[in-house]
Length: 186
Image (cartoon, rainbow, N blue to C red; front, side, top):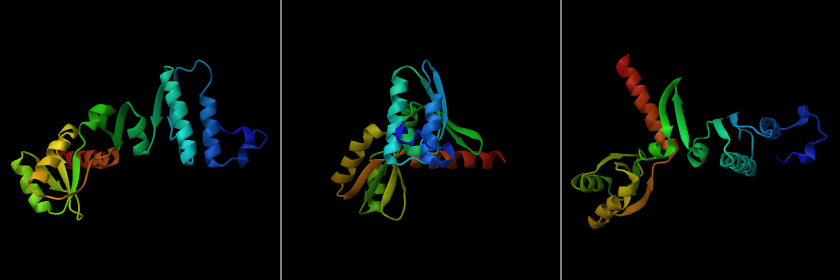
């Protein structure tokens, strides 16, 4: 865990990142079949986070089940196979990451959002405004991104940027859906 140089130091003198590494090491004894971790990369620098995740992925390859609680949405997107997304103490999503990923929208930034929305509507896509920068959320699966971009190009709409919604953006949408459900039920 990279603590060799601190072996003689008292625990009270360890930084938050060093304490995280020591807690992690304490979980990893031979023959372990499952590991439960709460915010394992909290307090670590970029290299430390990468080292921890590399070690965790090595454990997973050896058949160890990993249960990780994290607020680091982008880390969850990168490493999780199965997710439980909580909001306000309620389960907002539970399932495989790949299934959640299919719910990601296409985000395009264009020079003429009004024209782009009309073009996409004629092509069978719904597009909602995603901000003041000319961005649009296109309700279409990832595998249709090329089709969306081609429709815009054929109509002469200049696409400044095109990408998929990331997990953090999807989280906010799921959270909003849970809040709307709560308001309707109230």
